[in-house]
Image (cartoon, rainbow, N blue to C red; front, side, top):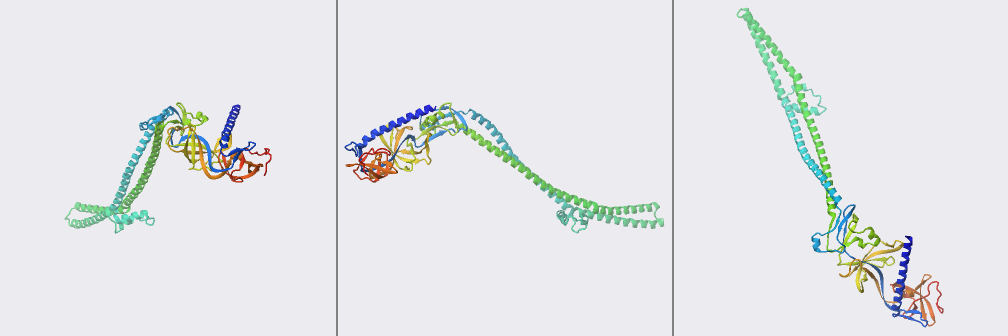
Length: 534
């Protein structure tokens, strides 16, 4: 392999040498008629003259469309080309309207994933819908539970008001929530003037019963006394007297029973019922708080479930859209009219083998498959050496010759230059060039993408300056020298040079018009012609 590489570079070097020799053979006769002459010894010379000096940079490059539509694989990972239109196929506007298929990529695996994702999405959608409905149900259930709890609190308060009256009930309620009043003796509340409700009614009933029993007892006593008097006078029998005595005892017992009933009510029944109703009211309030807390908790759980299912639904929907797009991306249709160019055709030989575009070839995501150039505006892509790149600027005019049309010269304009350099040759990394685009003026149906062109960028146009051929100037010890031919021999002359092109260089100082300069002056280390003078 190393031998093959060396042999290849030897052949390239030989070709370059032959090209240089051929250029010199063409160049010398061309310029000999424009100021060149010979002395008696037939030494090639050039007569210094004033002329216009165009400053140009000439490079070769490939013609490409200025604008083109690049069609790339949008399928993730790698996939296989199942079918592709032939390179060079012309896409018509009708093809675009009919969505003509240009490339088909293998979609079998994507189709399977799409089907699976549709099932997953439907399940996620059902869960999301269920969660939304559950949240609404929970909200309504919470409203019902809270209203029921509020109703229980209200009824418990009404029961307390009903039994004690509003004033005593409010005092008792405030005492249950106020530490300073929590030691209120409920039994003492019965003596409150503000007592009302069923408790007051019961107390009045008991007092009335006591009063009635007392009156009945007094009547029984009076009757018994009257019966004793009648018995002593033998107006009534003993049994009648005993019956009246029994009635008196009965009334005494009833009176005592009425008093005892009031005492039991005051000491036990009243405080018990009051505390029970107060406890029921407090418990109803606590239950309402528990209901509200449970409602908030259940609502938060339902909301969290909704958020979770919604996130899952959104994710699965995105995945479904993704796989649908991936499936659609497997079929590439004509986006615009033009001629189909395979991406591999625009690569060098090595890259073309690596990324060959054909049926059965694998392509990766974002890899360009085909390009549809716009032939209305073309450009030439050239590489400008780093020594010239600062002089080349967008907007400069250029003359362009195309290998396919050697007798025609086209005009163009520099569009842009790359900000960073490329390595022109891996084996010569120090040789840096900058990619530069030159637009071809006008529309030319005969010019095709991929043709070779030579671009001459016109950097400057010097007017009426002294010029000599480039080979007439040599460098020695940091100085620029020309050898002038005089009647007495050759004279070495230090000169100051200016701008130059491929053929001529501007002389700013050191020479005058009509002087003869040697075209083949001595180089450094070469013996100089006899008769030379300073």
